[in-house]
Each structure stands twice: as structure tokens, then as C-alpha cells.
Length: 112
Image (cartoon, rainbow, N blue to C red; front, side, top):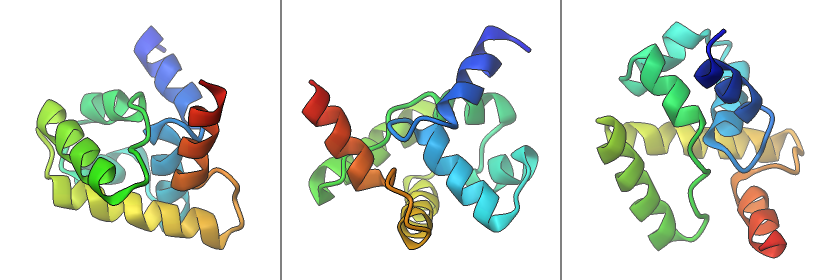
């Protein structure tokens, strides 16, 4: 496993990273890495890079700006990425998981 793969794997367990949200989504939809990448319209390498990004802000303006920036940086469709992340957030909240998008961002801001 490469260092990038190791970091992306760790990001799956940290709510402040997109890796955690993407893991929530993939688990609930029973998607493997290849299928998740295809759904996002990216390569496996870009999926690893995406996992290492910070979760977007929870306010509407910040969320849209962050989604656009992520999409532009990785050549993704912002609407497609937004749909996946919204669904992941809803699923995390439905499961009663305290690491939903808003809670993750709130904890990070309190720590700063």
C-alpha cells in the first residue's frame, strides 16, 4: 500500500474528511471502490485524493463554494459530487452517527 493509499484509508475513519462521508455513502449503497469512483465520475486515484480533502462547510454558501472548488480541482461534476455528499450526510444522520457533515465541521471549528 502506498503512502497516499494509507492516508486515504485513515481518512475513511475521520469525520472531518471527505473519506468518512464517502465511506458512509459507499457502505449504505454497498458500493466497492470502483463503483463509487464510477458514480462520482473519477478514477480510483482521484477517489483517493478526494478522500483526503476536508469535508465541505455546512452553510449553504460555503458548501457550494467548497463543492465547486473540489470539483474543479479534481475535474469532477459538482452536482454529482453534491448529490453523493448530501445522501451520505442524510444517511449518517439517519443512523444517528454523530459525525455527520455539520457535526464534523462544528467540531473542527471548535478545536481551532
